[in-house]
Image (cartoon, rainbow, N blue to C red; front, side, top):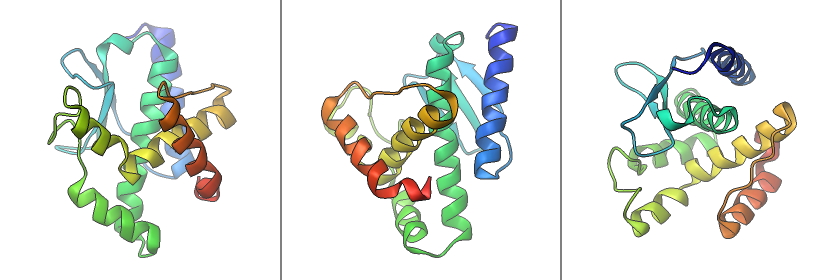
Length: 161
């Protein structure tokens, strides 16, 4: 469990991001057994799980919260809308790789396939955009090529952020 001050900061960011998307705020917990940095759980109910090693690291928690809320938004948007974006996201949601159905941690090929899914690029791009513009946090992906993909995605799609 994060300290009280960290818990308040996390709760406030969660509220701000859920308000930004106009979706219901969902619970956030920490788990030392997950291998990835964070994940969006869908069942039994929506929740965000962040790797326990980040419980007192606000920057990593902010990235996780923003990224996972974007995935929640993608699900909600694809359910309620019938435009090109919703159609693309709906299709990709049906076949999306994740730590639940692929070895994205230890298998380089599956990790690359996972990372270059539009839904994940979109979530990384939104995280970079939102945290820079609303939280004054600068997020730079450690992979320079992927960082360029994210920047290009933001340029092309920021009107949808």
